[in-house]
Length: 184
Image (cartoon, rainbow, N blue to C red):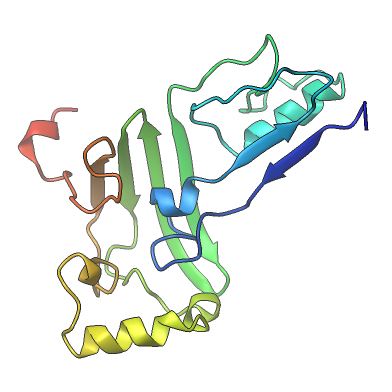
């Protein structure tokens, strides 16, 4: 155990309608814990990281040179450097085909929906088999959802989404059409 390094990480966020398999923080904000008490002092870092950073970290820990073509940063030790931004993508989730990209920098997240005429909740056996999904769809059909709840059941989605996570951590208020942000 003295020479063992343990990574604890999940592959997606929480299993809710806007969580797993979406680019909102519910789907991209995941735990990443490294246990190596004999190699590194305990610390908490609140930086943006990508899954690919685990590969660079693994190579670093094994003493293997990280190839120049890898867009990954080691997360431990002297060579650690924080990222200015992270990029996320969704293309195919099980039988659901989609094309979404996001860029997050500090407290802002930009999302580009390349297939905006598709609903958020396209048929997906993974989600459709969850006990809450039929209830959500039924409540939507009965007009019993409020405006915020109806965001996820919308038949189409905006081409672009922009969120200020410092004031809107649940990514509800899309600022993409707000003229204040149009030049940025």
